[in-house]
Image (tube, rainbow, N blue to C red):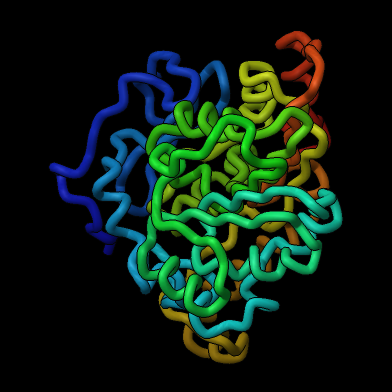
Length: 329
C-alpha cells in the first residue's frame, strides 16, 4: 500500500521550474511512491516534484525520528543515527571535504548541519570559525549541548548573515529539501567570499535515466522536492557566476528500500529475500555507473572566482553531460 503522507491542502501546483522559472511542462515523467509526479525542466534539466508539499508540510518531516535509524519503509528519515553515534561516525562526508578543501584559518558554514557532528570532526582541520544552521530544533539543541558548537535553528534566508561572510559553505543532502532553490542559491552565494568554495552533495537526477522506476529516490526520501543533474550544475555555474572545480558521483541508483531496518544482511535475506536479491543484482549490473557520472548521488565543488569567467556554449555543456556517453545502456 502506498503511504499517505500528504494531505490535499498541503500540496501546491507548480507553474514553473523552481530553479530557472521556465514554465512547467504539462507531462509528468514518473510518479514517486507517495503518488506525487516528477517533471523535468527542459532548460536547466532539474527534476522537480509537482504538485509539491508546501514549506510548512516539509518542516514537519524533520522531527527527532528523522535523524535516527528507522525502518526503510518509512517515507522520511536519515540512514545514520545522529543522536547515538559518535561524531567520528556521524560526521559523514568529512574525508571528501578535508581532502579537497583547505579549511585552515577559514570561516565555514554548514547548511543543514543536523546535530553538528560533521562540523565537530572538521575542527581537526583548524578552521578559524565554524557555524551550522538547521531547521530542526531537536537536532540543533542536542548538538549544541553535545559538541559546544555555534549551531542555530534557522533557515538560510532568516539567518541574517553578512555579505561575503564565509570562505566555505557546505551543503550535504540539503538542496533537494529546499522549497525555493532559486532564492536559496542566491543567498548562499551572497554569503560566500570571493575565492570561496561551495561543497555540495545531492541526489543525482541523471541516474534516474538508467534506473527508471527502480530509482532509489522514487521510493525513499519523499521529503525531497527536486533533484539536480550535471546539466543543472552547469546551469547554476553559468547563471550565478561560479566555476565548477570538481564534479563526481557515487552509489548504485536502483537500491530498493527494505520494509524494516536490519543491521544484519543475514536477517535481510531471511525476512526480505526478494529485495536483497534484487539489490545484489542492481549493484552488479550498475557497478560501473558511478564512474560514468550516473551514480545515485553526485558531489560538486563550486568556487566563486575573483575574475570574470567565460563559459562554454550551451552545446558544449550538453555534450559534457554523462548521459552523452554512448557506452551507457
